[in-house]
Each structure stands twice: as structure tokens, then as C-alpha cells.
Length: 445
View 1 (cartoon, rainbow, N blue to C red):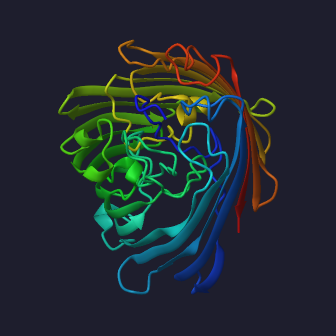
View 2 (tube, rainbow, N blue to C red; view 1 turned 90 degrees about the vertical axis):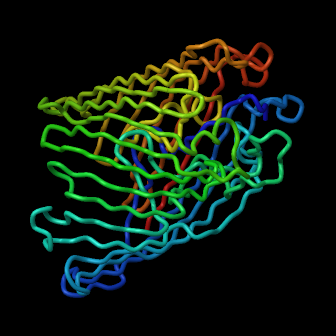
């Protein structure tokens, strides 16, 4: 892998529609849900192929590659309101993952990763109606190892699932960043240590105070404090997020990750229909203050669903922009809508020094079948970088819930970069269109 390449930070599930289906098997239920214990099992397996790669080694990887990924998550969740005021809840789970074949085309996994490890281990308390002036469940406190998502695009999860091929520190290839592969399926999402206090429920004025410590080497094991405040109404919400970078693990620092210690991030965001039925709007504008200077990141999207038209088509446009030194942080999809398949996962960074326009068309022939088409234009703003990641991409995919337990997600993508390895890009062979294929089976029981 060329050390000048900025690594992508998005382990994507399905490009725009369904997350893996989740279900639970009830093991115990007392007094109509007063005390509940559930068993949960989810799994996924994906087959992938591409006509070009982005590994920077044309002799070892001249072009087409094939690989597979899989994971299984298994555990228990439960809750009870019999221990006093409010209710206590918690979860405990394990996750097994692996990558086979050639490894992915972006030099993240090698195809030999196999790992089973603890995923969730958390406890929490909700106040119920014990504090009436804060509303129902006006206090929600949880701690431990768990998935934490903050509204907006700054913190989605801790799901950058690297493998043995990921070596962003020059001269270091000892596997210290290996997290068990399954980079694309990306289900290792929980932060290693958390404390989350939510106040005010989800309506009107509400907010949160959060402490997070990542145990992900691909995120330099960043530790941070977060505060949010929101005001929600039936037509939408406005809010603000503040993030303070507390620390990083120096053994895993690469690029500008060392600047996360002491970094401040501020954002203003909003989403809703603005009183227009079947419309959907969202935006966020964020600023990072770090030692090297101030950076900006933002997005805006607008969409509309034609509910009275056959197949209920949805049309949506999104614009996003990142300044040259923007740290992508723990960013993920914008409310489940991501920044392309090849571009953001494998083909090069779209997370800094980039302006992106994309359009979505979505159709629902049935309740269980969703058809999607997305088109992207990636324009690198500054030419001071050694590499040029400007490109265009089209992705066609569907999500078919075959049964309550099985969902199929085939996809074909067409990625056309402006440059290739021979003239300032990262794609192998030439700047011809890379045809990318994937087929994923999601299982839940």
C-alpha cells in the first residue's frame, strides 16, 4: 500500500437501504414484559469481485481480485422494572468474523483474518415515570462496551474493521492493526468503554453527555468527550454537538491522528420534513480546531417520496464537502446513506479535500423489495496532494427480504477515476472503469 494514500474509514453495510435485519428469540418473559431475557443471533456472508484494485503493487496484484467476508454475532439482551424505580437493561454478546480469498481491493484485509471477540457488555437504567418533569424515560444512563451513535455525521460507531494488510505506519507491518477482517460487512461496531447520560427523552428540549474510549487500533484508540443539545418537534429537529478529543494511543497513531488529542469539534445540524408531507431534509455544518489549524466539513440533502405513485419512488440529492485537512473521525453514513462503494471503501479517500454530489433513486415494488440506483461525482478541490482521487461512480443494488430471517443484497458498481497508478492515481492497470460486484446474505434468528 502506498503510504501517501489516505485510508478510508467507512466499513459499509449496504449502500443505502437496510441494515442487517435484527430479531430476538424470547427466552423468558415475566408479567407481560416486566422482566424479559432474549437471545439474539445475526450473521452475514458476502462474495466480492472487482476488475481493478488499489493496492499499489501491480506485480503482486495486477488487476482482478476475488474475496469473501463473513460474521456471526450471538448474545443476550434483557430488561427488568422490578428492581426499583425505572428499569434496568443490558446486553452481552460475542462476534466472530473473517475474510477469505485474495483480500479486499483496498489493501485493508489479506484474506487470512479470523477473530472471535467480545462485542457488547453493557448495563443501563431508564427512569420511566420516576422523574415526571423530564418526561417518560427522561433519564437514561448506560455504561460498558456498547454501540453509541451521536445524531449527525461525526460519530456513527467504532466500526473500522481492519485486517492484516492494513499498515498505515511506514515500515510497520506487524499486524498490530488487525481487527479480524470483514471490513465491508463491518459489524464490530461497539466502543470499548463508554458512559452515556441522556436527559429529556426524545421530544422537545433534550441532550446528552457522553464519554467514549475506542479500542480500535484503526482509530488510534481515540478517547473523547461529547455533549449534545437538541430541540425536536413533529416537523423536525435542530441540534448542536461538541466533541473534545482527550487522548490517543501513540502506538497506533498515523497521519494526523496525533492531533485528535486536544482537538475540538463543533457542529450545528438539523433534519425533518419542514412541514412538507413526504419530504425529507437534513444538514450538518462542522468545524474542527486542531494544532494544524481549523477545518470544515458539511453536508446537505433533500428528498421526496411519491407515495401515491406505483412503487413509491424516492428521489434525493446530497451535497457534501470536506476541507483539505479534515479528520473523518468516527463518521459513517448520513442516516444510512453512504458515499459510494468503490470510492469510499477502496478507491481512495473521499473524506478530505473533496467535494461530492450524489443523486439517489429508490423504488419499492413490494414491502420486501427495494431497488436503488445512485450516481456520484467526486471532485478533489486542491491539487497540492501527491495523488488525485477525483472520480465518478454509479451503483445499482437491491435489498430483498426473502423471509423474516433472510435478506439478499446484490450490487454492481461502476467506478471511473480520473487518474491511475501511472499518472497520479491509485487504480491498477489504467483509469478504465472498474466493475465491482458483490452479493451479501444477511441472516437473523
